Picture 1 (cartoon, rainbow, N blue to C red):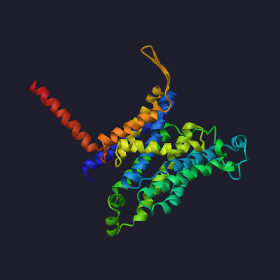
Picture 2: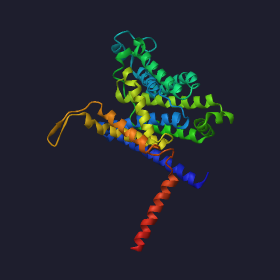
Picture 3: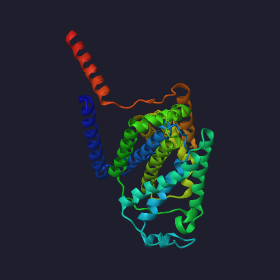
Picture 4: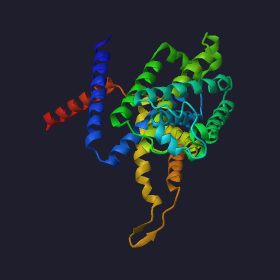
Length: 356
């Protein structure tokens, strides 16, 4: 391993450790608003990075994020709620066995939520990945809506359209950002491996990749299943954040938000996805002001519900028209480039100081 690679690896490990230490500190000392904001950033980052894997690297424009997130959210909720809470909550029909008696610890419930989302992703991908272009896009959207409707019509399992309330929150900032780091690590390792090079070839030209001996279905399926696993984890964290879930919370609007973050960051950039998810999260909170009535210069302005969505749509349109590559394009953060830039700035400042 080259010295630059070793240095970059050490700096990455140290940065990740410092990030987790800060999040552990934040769980204890930050207020509820700040904690919620950082937690929402983590959830959005997992969604955006997983979309970058399936579309930015594999070239498959999937609209299944909302349905897969619902699988993860409902799994962790059903596993962590106590039997007593379920008996009180299920009003239309009593919960079926084993839903009525099961109660798992947090970590196994989180992992199973990701695994079940990956399994569902496999069954979605088995027929859908044999399609291409718009047909694949519409197939995944249809499967996502099908999942939502199934959850809305299974009152004995999911409590139907009434949803689930009082979901216990075990995941703090430490766990949320720990899963972000895991998502980034796995996605980056996959993209830099021989598999990653093959899947990027599939993205650029499927016919040429197949002629070169790449198994198209197997490579696309692996990307889809891995992406589905992390979407399930993100959905489980979202359920922990909200404390309440219902089928109408997992409509295509959630998927479109993920696409917005991915486009803003750069479709092929993991770094860009994390940065853009933070911008999206903080902007969404700041733009709440435009939906609330307020007085400006003595003029009473009414709040306009839905204005945030309109502003985000305009932002996305401007990005597509004038900055199509997004914030990072297909580039990633590099410690070597960062340190070289710092060294160059220091040398310039030193030279100017000497001339003065």
